Length: 385
View 1 (cartoon, rainbow, N blue to C red):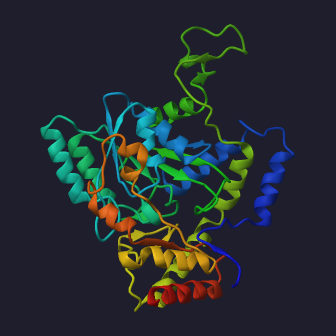
View 2: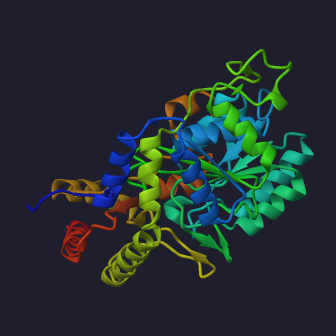
View 3: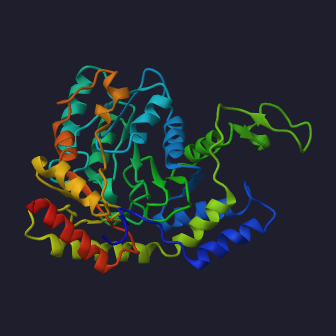
């Protein structure tokens, strides 16, 4: 057996290493000039007015909810087919959490299911305060439809674009917040670009940006205009809100800035590999991921669906052969913590059916065609067994 092929892997260049080393030789390791440069670069890249960098996308989701005033008595809705952070951010704020099932074809938040659920919620006086659509695999949701529904029902929107920096929907860059209040990106090592760990929230609302900035740094301000009284001296600061230590370091931001220069190349390579998967997998008993014509996917993941009765055997055979396939994701509502809240199997049948069939195949810029051929051959053999 040849070497192990993971489902994702970071691509670190000498320029990335030099950028981080430069910060290590500078006067600042945290709260210096590089983080604001990174924030401005990402915001400019996606066409948003403001960027707020944080130590993770989970932290970004949390402060986004805080900025929108989510709290006890409120509700947050997201999809079950996501990482748990998309739902947990609501619990962090003391809100309740519920889910909208995914579309059978796109595997993303279903606008029809959302419309029906919002109509029922309005009739019962239980509309959510915040909606979190998730751009699974880097494929944008139908944000025009979702945004229109949110405006109709007075719901705030946070796009979970952890998979989707560099993606586009209907001519809008994901992160421009054309149909949302805030967008959140992840820079975990397996994502499109990395800061090792890190996240960033974009918004076009300066008040939301400022609330997120305060929340990431203990709620502390040194701006006299925000203080309750005149400062005693240059040392004076005030905590004007409850916040956390969610700051991104200078080293992380330097790595992110360097990686951002190659964002286009990274996505072009992922697009080429995905198109090659499309050709090589044609004829196998699998459902290939759909990429809508109005979108340009960032292609963080390449997920296929295999027959449910072959799912476990196929997964095991590929792992045994050194192919690091994965499942993105186990439905959140089936996690023990959420079952304890009353959720149960059968609540969201499309998400559950997806999880019983989905397998994430290796996809990252450094994946060679020979490695990709091995992935496909192993999958074909596993399905034929």
